[in-house]
Amino acid sequence: MNRIPLLISCLLLFLLACNAFTPTAVEPTAAPGLIVPAITTPTIQAAGTTTAVPTVTPFTLGTEPTVVPTFGGLYFARQPTLPGQTAFAAGTEEVFAIWQYANLTEGDLVERRWFKDGQVWLTREEAWQATVYGVSGTRVDVSVYDFEGSGLEPGHYALQLFINGQAQIRAEFDILPPGEAVITLSQSSETRIAQVWNGRRLMVVGRDGRERQLAQVEGEIVELNWLPDGRHLLFVELDRSEQIANSSIGLKHALWQVDADTGAVTQLGSFAEDLHGMKIAPDGRYVAFTTGTEYGDACFVDRHLRVMALSDRYQRLGLYERADFAGAPSSTIHWIYLDWENKTSWDNHKTLRVAFAVTCLEPSQATPAELRLPGYYLLDMETFTAVRTGDLP
Image (cartoon, rainbow, N blue to C red):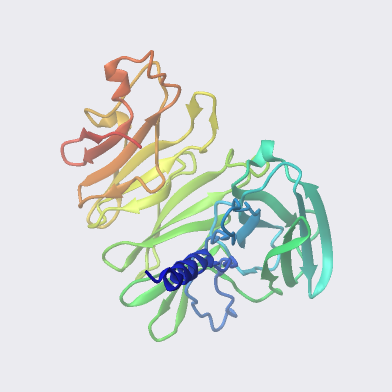
């Protein structure tokens, strides 16, 4: 037999198999911001959220892939819990930088290089504290501020992040001069657009471009939604006057309803009730909220459910809590709280899907009834009953 060609063919196949494909790393991008119109000619720009794309590390056969520390998704906001912006009104005292991180280890050198109007403004270096921040997550405790003067000076700002001397991601924002407006929220109906200017002024803009002010608040308007009739609006006002440091403790929210035709403003929820995170039923007759500071410590979490019933003219009829629904979880021993984020929604005009969680529930010591306390529930607003539909992840 002629074995030489066969051996050569096998050798070629082996070499081709060893020629491993090397993927290209994807550089994460900054989150887009909101709008910066002048007061006389506001415009709307689509906003979204960009998250970091994990870096793919090339490797060859016989070696282990190297884990690379990365930053991504950098954006700026007035508070870590608020939407990102690329422009802030004159007089803004503090701007937070929020970004995602992955694969960091104890002692990695992190540099924050701030620029103002194209020049290096501030530089901060620190060794990464994995015992505080972990190896992956979202950093929310970095800000620039001026509480003593008239706020941060107008100008163009930028932040460049580095890890161990390697540039990671850069994002920019502006502090506008006096007289220019930032649209911090915007919601459209079929016939008009509701906008919040500089966080405090609620405006309505017709399809013909004409503007009219509906309300101005002392705090900040942080939520805004049209009701189904396209005429009435709900908005949430935030009061920070009793806020403790940069935490959610001391924050209070009030709920308002506005008739965009007449300009009539009605308060539906007080600051003491602290209603926020609204989710409106399809017909607008019920609105679900969370209330509480969101603070958690040991076996305590301050987050609760409230549901408001509205009339056909969107006036308040009643406010209900978990205990008002027969079959909802209850306990005199364990703390039950609302598992709110991405788990509360309206199935239809009268059925609310929620998740309740329980703190400090030790499975080995709990009774079967206690183990069924946490879970998904359907709340019926007509019968005021709750039915457990499944376990939490």
